[in-house]
Length: 227
Image (cartoon, rainbow, N blue to C red; front, side, top):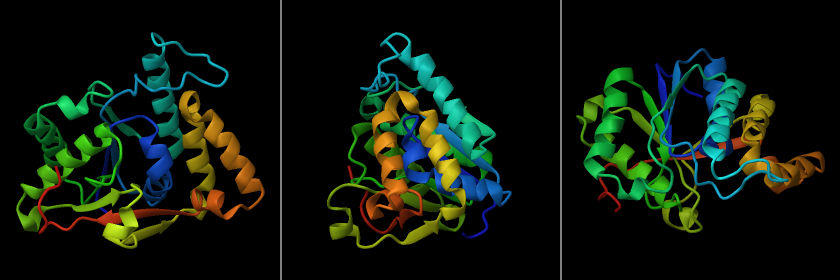
């Protein structure tokens, strides 16, 4: 992994970071790189309530907040920002305000790298709204001042349209940190973790992909912004 001055990670929901980039986050932190995670919502509309259920619709926001803190501790994150937006409503937020929120973070932290979702390939409306805001904020900057942008993309047609990932991080040395981050979000991840850990024990190739590498795309700033 390249040396960075500061990494800014922006995702809409608790557990987005755990599934997609927790190995990368842990690796940067182990290198001594300052890192900030801005989580836009508490994921209070998450469909799962635990397995067996231990949360209610009323208690889930506080539970997910605690899970987010625990996951951040598992990765070594010291600068966690909870941005206070509402789950499943980001697509209805004012685009300019969303962009300005991201730009304020960039102006404050001056990151050399921003990590988020890739617009058009992030599947969930909240993911897409976050990706648009991040891309818009960076695009508005002078080219010489823009941080690098590494984006997570997982739509079914990702490789068909974007090709192979541009950046692949080997996360084998931080497998346990990644698993612990996922375990922290237990209200949402119980069933998947059960299957994943069984697969890892069996050395199943699909399961091993989760704990051996994380993949990112760089953004083509010459293309039109996807809406």
